[in-house]
Image 1 (cartoon, rainbow, N blue to C red):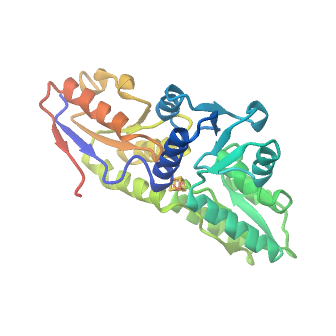
Image 2: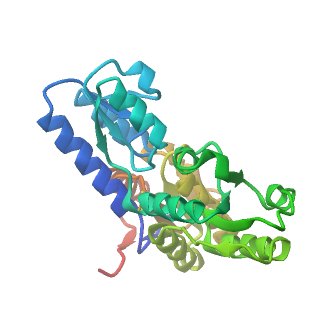
Image 3: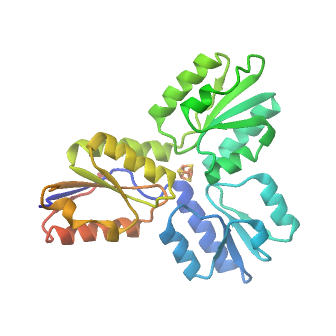
Length: 296
Ligand code: SF4
């Protein structure tokens, strides 16, 4: 029987996502013409659906946007794409997260100083595309420790290491160690976002108190997937759910019988989805579970 629902101290929308959504909402209200978001404004289907309902379109290529205003998502974009959009007459509204823009600044500065960059991240992520697009001939992406170790020795090259904002701090510490062993002269630029670290630390605090952790977030959200993985590793059971509809009441009855559930949410998950999850869990507990909210 479900007795306790504990909410992670840090969860849900981060500063960059809140800002991007606000910019997109304001743009949708102000512009009279067509408004299109390039890629997902954030990696969450519920947020994207809401924008679609407000008449804000979505496209994955500038080629598919014939006119109007183009909003760049929180994950950022390569500068050549912004140039292409302006060249075809589109008005560009940039909602790139300032912490992603900070990585662009670091990259542009160190490349101008003759550095070559090894970026540790997912090569298929929108954020990585934007980062590589800053200096395509001066960056290599390594998506794993093995791939990093397989790179050339580059003894005579000035090197810098940057990292995807959503990477795990401890995991990156190992990558940093390996990179320094391979290239003792490499300079490290820790570009991990504080919001991600706070959510990951909150999971570590939450895990010992509960039998299962539900992470509310989209499968397309790298940080939500990572939170679910960390939850599984520490607590034994971490499940990524996109909404309350994914909750299986069996998790709280029969053999599985979790009595305490922890709730977290990725940085791109809106509060209303978390509220619906709590509501559903209360229903499953027959409205008897104690809800423990984080200290404010
Ligand atoms: S997770 Fe961090 S870097 Fe990414 S959008 Fe949010 S605040 Fe910005």
